[in-house]
Length: 92
Ligand code: SF4
Image (cartoon, rainbow, N blue to C red; front, side, top):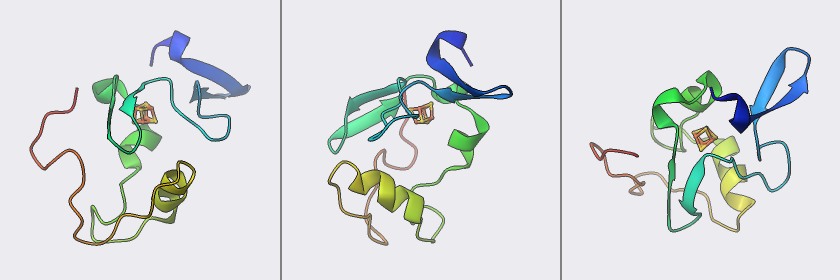
């Protein structure tokens, strides 16, 4: 993780710049929320990012996904709703 993308939040932990304020917007998020976004460091993203699934990706709801969307005025994803990117698409 590049040092210039993180902020120290305690002696042992860092967070992506922009995720420590409300509404959060990670410094590495590119694009327009609600239209189309991507992670500019997708291959280097942290384990919390890797572990986070959008609602219904694994067939389960995700209240954290719903809350993140709500912070930007977006409704929760619905089961079987297509998500971006389509399966198999390459994310920059
Ligand atoms: S996946 Fe990328 S854009 Fe999203 S929070 Fe993690 S580093 Fe930021």
